[in-house]
Length: 167
Image 1: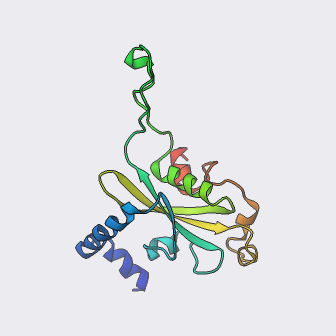
Image 2 (image 1 turned 45 degrees about the vertical axis):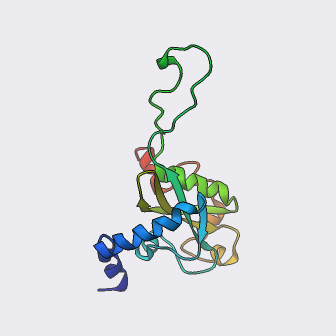
């Protein structure tokens, strides 16, 4: 068995859950979009196309769980006409996290993303971003196509976006 297979098997274990519980304490204090040095789940990042080379980087995105709530408008309205009920997002939380990461880093393109952890209030995803103008990316045969693409996450072309569009 290879190293990544051992990592994949270890992901749901009790030791891993204890480790993640400690990490979540520090992650809660971080900002919404945080660039990190290397992926936390190395096996998942490799399977989604991440490479340990220049031009690739990982961003951890924190997103609130549950439906989005709107402020109650001033003035008398029926509750059904006030726009408060059933405000469910059309995209998944993972697709929304990819969009936030791509807005934070406009020079990069979203390659893919994966689930990291969650608590009662938030979910964390790690988003793989590629610098489309980096020479190492342009000359790479496997991911060089991304240099000619703009706005994959906004148009729903990542895997999470395609699931939201029922493709």
